[in-house]
Image (cartoon, rainbow over all chains, first blue to last red; front, side, top):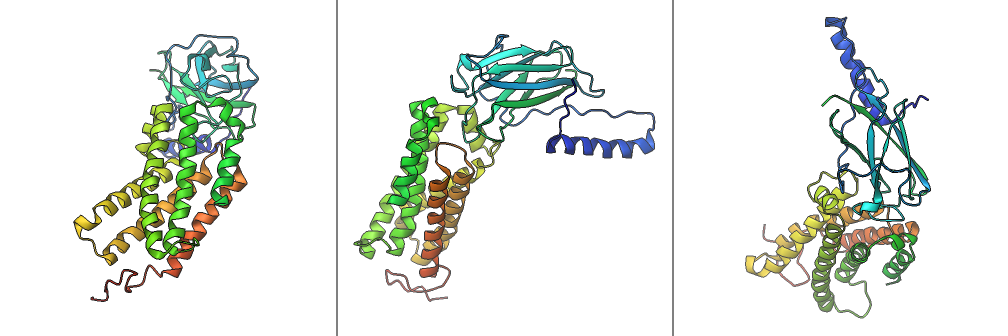
Length: 162
Length: 196
């Protein structure tokens, strides 16, 4: 499974790295610039509770959070990475323990966790995800749903060694 | 009054309320009431509300200004209790939500007007000086509040929210045009400000 991620942030990042590669390439033709690491999003770590348990499903489910985890540079999928997920849902507020859960990426670096329906909080329907396991640099994401009626949301990680 | 009550009633019917705590709900409604009061202010000062003399309208404008500060403190305080990190982001202008800086800017403008209004006599501010200070801040308050409100996706119903925001904008533009606030002219209190 290959997830193609096309959003403005990614295109800007990719465009930037193409420019950087182009300029550097004139001087250092042998050097390969690769996939840029994902930056932590502002507000991403809000209401984070360290060490959410790995679960089959958060609460009663009905909403799907999914994404991929890859390595910066070569973009290789990272298997077995623990991704923590939390949000304000129909079953609890962001800071409450039952709103938090974690899952592991499969061999393709993909993860998918069922959770209760996310509803707008603080003016935007959004979720929170964290990679905070130590091997790579910690990243917090805060994706926003296009519509509060959406029943799924995606977030993608490109990690760099800690 | 329907302009203020209808959007608040529509928000009271929002299904989102079922998943919110009482403090968060209170904070949300305090924000809506604050926006309603922002509509009342130009109506009072323009004398558009029937049955109020210019003097009483101005007195009411002062009291409503105080009520606006209270509503705002409840709004921000309630949101702070609900999620401190999100509020810290908003107040420090580092929030990912595009509406936050608009609301926070309007909040500071409201506080500035309230403090200056309270100290106006002590500072000896003349009517013209006051106007020069208050009018730009009023523009910031109205623009900030309206954009803040329109960008928030919350319990308010879209159409009634947009209507209230349009009325706030309309009332502000009308009173500023009617009173020609940008002109140097004698004020309603009869103070002469033509010295230049």
